[in-house]
Image (cartoon, rainbow, N blue to C red; front, side):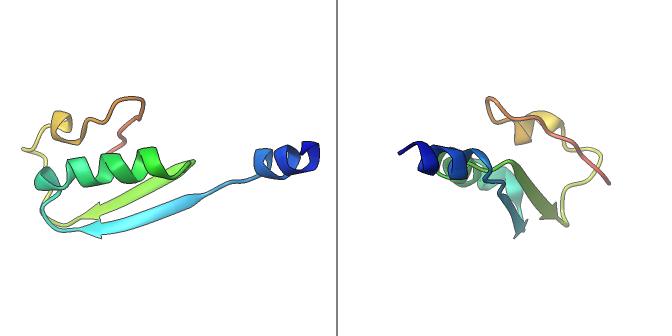
Length: 68
């Protein structure tokens, strides 16, 4: 069991989704983040512009960094 814990502690995972219309997919994204133990999760959203506030992307326990 100790070897399994050591292997899992060295695990690093990254995921990326290309979404269209993120505002209506936040619940789905939240389920993904809480189902999989991801270290980094990236999103590409073509229709997210500077006028849409960060709060539409708010998911507890996660930070949002936007690059436009």
